[in-house]
Length: 394
Ligand code: GDD
Ligand code: MN
Image (tube, rainbow, N blue to C red):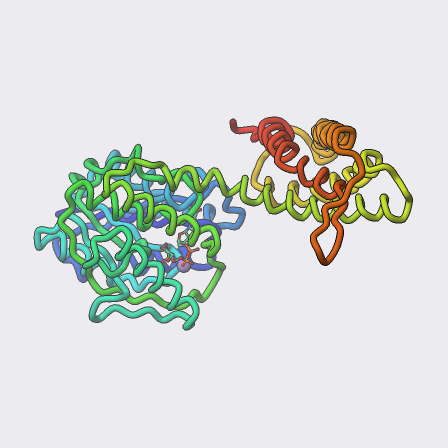
């Protein structure tokens, strides 16, 4: 008998996992000569009874295996295959969503494609016989994502890049450059990226039809903004590489995500700062440098709240919120001193003048204010990144 291993990634799938395992096992009758083994890789963040349900099945059936995985779909899939290679020694490796959205008979077609001599079989909603039974919005999204991958990254003759349902030979899996594959990240980029790396490893591939249904139970873990951001940067990155430009666009863009958010908070904070700076000068008659001191204090509170609950939300720090607020104030005090010194220097040097724009006069103090921004921003990001919201895992 030949062995087929099926990796099922789960993250809070208590409502679907038992029936999915059952439906996968049932495909055995359509695959004479094959034995089906199942590896469930449950995310360590799963908080429902997925683990309990699967463990009780494991105790009754030696063809079902259960392991826990670090966070992320990529980790679940890759560590599941590694586990299968070590413990099951399958002839064919495969994977499929565990939430019941993919009709499991695709496994039969995937295995047949490998038997025909291909080393990679891709489940596809976009070949004849395939169906995507989602809402119109999500259909456009999946089609668009795959179309972007086809055009930017290629090969163009593959129609489905994003769905997980695939089968491949152990030989192909062992040839894939896992160091380059971004499988440890908690986004769904592993779908298109695995395909790309398989092609680079010389895969002989075939697409087989797949039917994708609406989710009946549980919730989707895909994050549309993050996924789109990653697909776009990954595809451009791979295209640049194929053109000979070895620029780590994907990696840098992922890092830049935090800087981009911090920058947006900075802009909002600057508007708050500037608003109060002008109010204090106009209504309280404060000198520019004094006004800047007070307005900065208002902006600090604004920025702390936004950065803590948005920009750096994902960071696990050793400190609690009040300690972070304390440190943030000290960091900002540094920024405040830099800002005040710059304004004081410029005010001392250029004084209180006006620039005549023709239709109105613009006070010099406006320019003093904006001159502080780049310096204060660089200081703030650097120190907050390395100290205030320092990741515990670093
Ligand atoms: N262990 C683990 N860790 N499993 C995960 C994680 C994770 O972080 N995220 C998702 N899963 C599991 C889910 O439990 C489910 O079995 C499967 O992976 C697919 O996740 P869904 O949350 O159901 O995603 P989807 O159906 O919205 O995503 C579909 O579209 C994506 C993009 O087009 C699927 O077809 C994906 O395969 C596809 O990448
Ligand atoms: Mn799903």
